[in-house]
Image 1 (cartoon, rainbow, N blue to C red):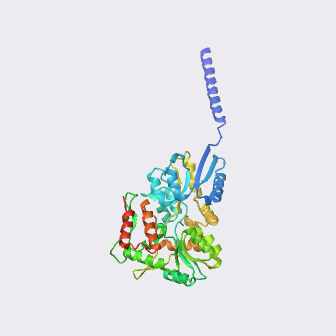
Image 2: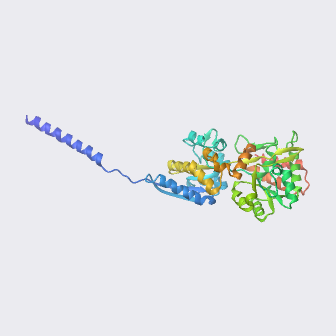
Image 3: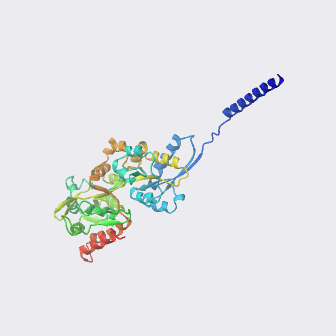
Length: 410
C-alpha cells in the first residue's frame, strides 16, 4: 500500500512537472526583434527624388516586418550591366537597366527567373514582357515602355500634313531658314532608314554576334538606295545632324523646328514651343522612288534583382513595388515616362500626352533593340560619312560592304 501510494504521488508530481514545463513553453516571450534588411538600389540620377519617395512608401507599407536600411545610389541605366558584372556580390540588390542588357545579365547568372511570372506578365504590355524574357523565362520586372523615338515638330512652321513626310518637313524647314535635326552619329537613330526596307540586322543564335544585310545588292530596295537617300537628305539646307543635346539647344534658341528624339525631352520641348508643340510618328522618306516609313528601335526600362542579394525575398518585393501600378502612375506624373503597366497605359492621362501618343503610334513600326556590341561603331562611321556628304568620294557599295562586314564580325 505504501509503495502504491508513493508511486501514485510520484506520478502526479511528474504530470504536474510536465504540465508546468508545457505552460512555461507556451508563455515564454518570443523574440519579436524584426530582422535587419539592408538593400541598395541603383537608378538614374534624374530619378533620385522619385525613387526615394517610392522607397519611403515601401518601408511604410512593410513597417514592423523588418528593420530596413534601403539606400538609393545613382547609376546610369545604360552602363548598369558593365558596372554590375564588374562585381556581382558588390553590386546593388535592385537596379534599373535598359532591356538590351537582359541577355548578358541572365547569361552571367546575375538574374534569377521571376517567381510570380504569370502575375507580372498579366499586368504589363506584351512588348515589355517580351523585352524582359529570355528563352520563355521572365527575368526582370517591366518598368517603362518609352525607350524609343518619334518626331517633334513646331506647328507654327510645319503643318500636320507636312509632318507626314520627310520631304515636307525639310521643305518647311528650308523655307523658314530653320532645321530638322537627327543624330546620325548614333547608330540607334540610323536604324530608322534601314528598318522597314527588307534589309536586315540582328543577333545570331549565339546571342553575341550579328548578321547584317544592309549591303544587299538586289531586291526592291538595295543598300545603295538607302545610302543615296541619306545623301539627298544631308544635302538639304533644312537638315542638320545633331546630337540630342544640340537638338534641344536648337529648340530653345529657335533654330530647330523639328527633330527626332524621345519622351525625355517632352517637357523641355513643350516649354519652348508652348501651344505649337507637336508630336507624331516618324515620317516617311523617299527611297528609290518609294515612300518608306521610317522605323525605330524600341525598348523599355526594366528592374532587376541581383541573384547574389543577401535578402532576395525583400529585394524582389521592392522591385515589384517600384514597378506596381501606383508607382508607374507616379513615375509618369513626376518624370513623364511611359508606363509598361496596362492599366496606367490605358489611362486618360497617358492618352492625352502628345509625346506618349506619338511613341505608341510609332510602335507599329518599331523593333526591339537586339544587336551585339559590334553594331554601333561601323554604322556610326558610315552614317557620319553620309551626313558629311561622302567627302572622300569612296564607292558607296564598298562602304556598305565594309560596314556590314564589321557589324557581322565574329
